[in-house]
Length: 138
Image 1 (cartoon, helix red, strand yellow):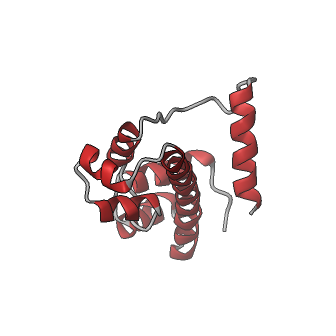
Image 2 (spheres, helix red, strand yellow):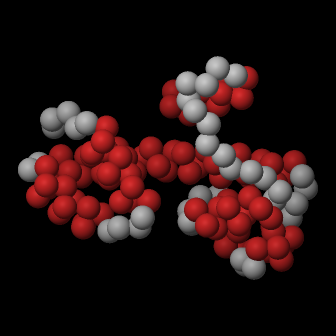
């Protein structure tokens, strides 16, 4: 497999997050980048793994905050309009929530999601680098 630049991997990430079918993404990148099906699937798998890791990390963090605040899934269901069983599946990453649903869960749990510059020189960024590093070492 040839080295793919990060811009191409970001395209795959964007398409996956938009909900495009893997078969459509694969066909598209094979044609545009003139790569084999095996290489295309390898690229898609690597991006999918990163997305899944980040999603699980967010959901794990949110679940911990919900437990610390002693908010029940039933209370979240009332606030969000989701069923308790769907909340359980979303928080356990068995049924990954869309970004809209994740934001709805965060609002109901009185939590924020934010983006921070990885190169920022502050305590919060150091904490995130340490947490993210632990995820990638496992």
